[in-house]
Amino acid sequence: LAKTRSFKRHILVGDFNLPGISWPDGTSKNVLESEFVDFLCGELGHSQLVKSPTHVSSNVLDLLFTNCPDLVSKLSVCDLNEVCCSDHFGVRFDINLNFNR
Image (cartoon, rainbow, N blue to C red; front, top):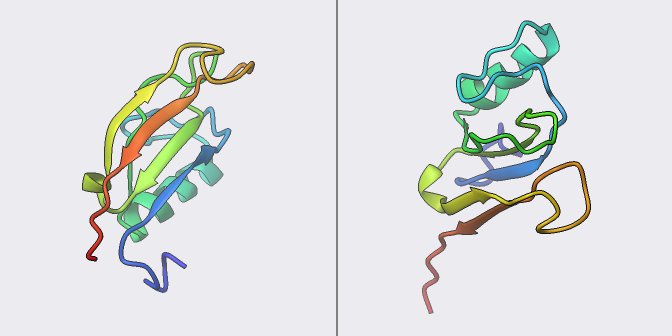
C-alpha cells in the first residue's frame, strides 16, 4: 500500500523482533535486516521514531515507522509491566489528526 502511494501518510507500529538493527542509525550486519531498513527508510521515506529499548534485553524491538513524523507526538516507552505482563515495554504515543466538519 505504501509503495503504491494509496495513502499519503503512514504509521506502521509493532514488534518487529529485529535485534540486530542498531537504532537510531538503522544499521545492521544482517543482510535481511539491512534490506528491511533500506526499503522502509530509503525507498518509502519512513523514519523510525522509537529510540529507547523496548525489551528487557535492552534491544529496540517495538518500532514505529512513519513518513510524516509530525503525525506522532508524546511518544514514550513505558515501564516494564506498566501496560501488560510481558518482556516488552509498551510504547505510547498520540496521533495528530485534523478533521474538517
